[in-house]
Length: 608
Image (tube, rainbow, N blue to C red; front, side, top):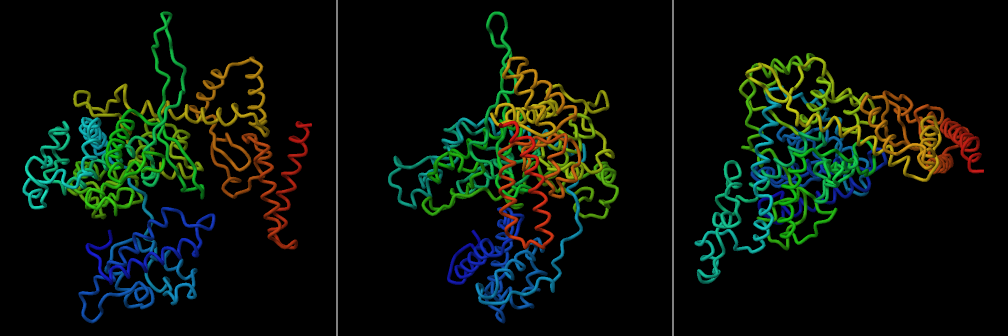
């Protein structure tokens, strides 16, 4: 909701903003494939919302009155005032203005101001800081305590929430009387009575206390916030990856066969759980990805699913892959027929008062910050002053997990790279920047031993062991369980292994165990490529430069005939776009020739 109430002026601004966003999506271009990503569209909408509020706020100035977005983006004085008075990412506004310039005067009906005239430069880039050890351990404990607290109601909270489909449910008797519900026999339970009846009295206390119906939306949002932060803490997933998770985000995958004793009793369960989501940061297209889910993550998702089930009944939607896990609880405060399904907006104001944001910075924390990044002057940054609450962001969990894992040896760099899905070692090292300068996290602080102690059930062990299994399973599933023959350096080796498995010479379990060990030791990695796959560990200059034909002679390459044929076809189509005397034509022609030589010499010969 942009405005508290809606009149002609507000509706005009909303329609104007919707048209501008439509033009930006379909006519501005951008991104690696000529389209704006979902995250960019969302950031544009956030700034347009702020712009609408600024335009309407000018109503208080008798000399100005309500502005239109056209006036804001065409009058230098208005735009300069907006930039100076509003708090938002100025680079996003620059992107909007550049996009509208690309859309053109013909579609907009006016010429947009040049963003270069205004100070819309990106501020100096600063990495998200590593959370100091003391604070990081406290956050782990707080997340665990809050999650255990919420898990007490995981069996009943969905039924409790769904009762609010009745508009009178949860209201005080006095309010129900004023609304003409009828006699006392028809009164619905008040909020406190309902909480008691559904056995949730132990849940709706403390920061989750709910004394009246109108506060329930914010309380549910705080619960979802805990779920979200636990997932960030134990997986390192990005903001958008978490927020794109659907209700059906958990799946089981067997990574180890069950152990059965001589009496036929099962002694070990064959189970590994993954969180499924979608990432578009590097791909330019939607791509399903998986993260290992430790026990705490499974509990967090179950709490999120319970809340989602209740809200989905109010929205009257199915619990399928299209239903977001973090469905917006705003439906509680809107007419059910008018509520639009969306994801929760975790604004700063909405999460204020959370125990996760109550940890104060101490002098030892500031000293540790300075040691972790000597190039940055934390002492002169107000946000990190002693006594201030730690400015927690979800991405800090991501970087801290990488930092502490690499420092302690519990997580190797290849594991880091696979978990966080960075496409190059360079990006992985950037997120772990300075990890040698900060002491390791060892679970919890033992006052008797005056040292950090890592319990045997610590999540680091689960994470360390699960990721090599995940990579090994992906490699084996992609290569050994497919009928398509494999070529290339590693591809030829994998093809021989596949033939040995089919002939009964070796067992798939032996290959899986060997692959897991090699991944864990950093001897191999695996990622899909344009021509098939790559098992090379470390930097690949050719990959960074987009020279995929180098894979043909790389010892770590896995070449699939179907991918090779598709690449040849795509290259031929691209060749038709260039003049024969152009440099681009010669480069693409050379690529086609190398691909055809490889196909004729190896693949076609084998097929014959």
